[in-house]
Length: 397
Image (cartoon, rainbow, N blue to C red; front, side, top):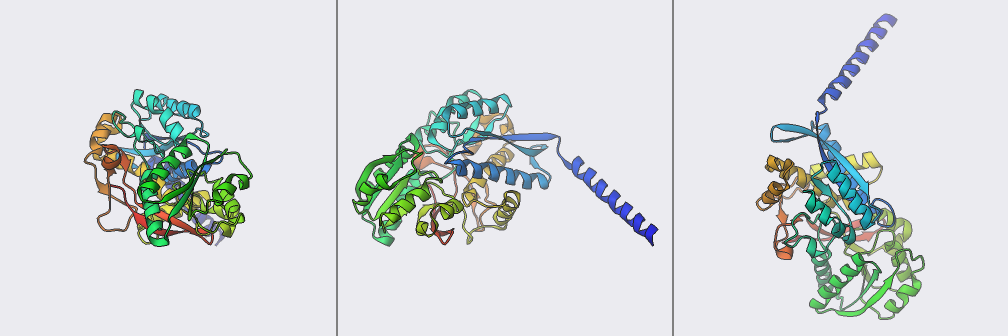
């Protein structure tokens, strides 16, 4: 009996060992490196962290299935990351690192300054990069190497303001922004959009430093203008709960919104129930339209990192677009001109939406005069009871 037990154990051990050898042999010799340059530390860390985690999760899922076949070659996907700490100089260093490693496709940076700073490096080294930054100059000819990875504030802002005007009777709007180029640019775009909709802008020149800890003196003059909607332009996830808490403690009872994606956990920890009703741009999926593939992605992400960020519903798309475009034209693997040519007519099934006929395609003709934007659903969320709920879903172009 004991001998049979030992023999059985030995056979099982051998089987597991052979299984391990098989898995090792299943790894592909060819590696496809995709880069990330963006912020994963500091007040805006949630933006870049969701990028990196989305890329690593999707890469793991693809590699588990045997890799990605492009032309006659099957690759394992390898993600190479660089934290630029929201510093344009470090962003340049990060993009230079990607060039040195022969990487042609990079996700990020996450802010306007960084995305603009790396443009010369990307163009000189044949790198297509996918920023989460909004300046139109990055995507309008003669610029050609940047592809906007999400919906821009000048696209989401009008949709949010129009919805709140029609559904909530909003008439007066106030804007508050950090004293940095990125949020200031988003503020200016918001003011333009609100004015075009016939809304009255009652406050627009109040700013704050990103290291501010007491927002009461910042918000007091804004609250006195009695806006129906307080817009936190380009607000970093770490600052959002502080601003919301201060506004509510000052007695403000109106609506609060932003055109940047946020983190529900950060809001819950920093503002709790005071953040209920806060409106922000969400990830490009909702429970109603999420496919089985999206649900599997969320499960794997949560398994790998112990939590999930709704913004990753959008961030999963960049790597998917890169790989599917390369599959559509294998010559683009090391030729970015082939990649940009393919973008004009590219179309592939959208694996993350259950909607019949949903496709991946490049858009941007309306905003940029050329296809330099990923088509992802515009999901607008309302924070409530510790989580985001879908307010409405729209689209660009």
